[in-house]
Image (tube, rainbow, N blue to C red; front, top):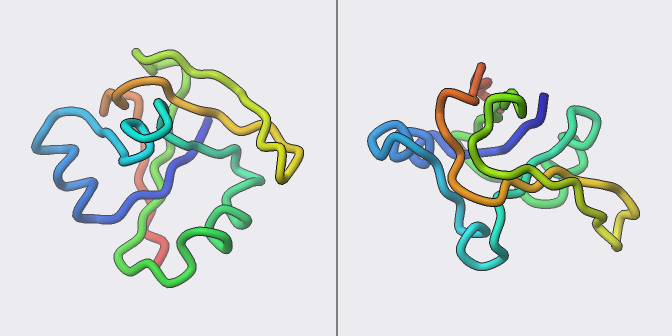
Length: 98
């Protein structure tokens, strides 16, 4: 299982579109994701005051886009990156954070 933070409005748009893309897909070429044990750090670094935040639970076996584990040099940790649109049937749960 991998995880991705998303706002409620972005999740609603994804449901309307039938797939999810993040701004990073267009600027970096992939959608950032995390392992469960990385979620707290990602929340603290990037989303601490983000309203209406949720976390997607993604079954990586159901992804239709390639998944690559890549090193974040600043943290010396491997993070999962989704290289393409996130197909919604790979999302097995969504959890409200704030």
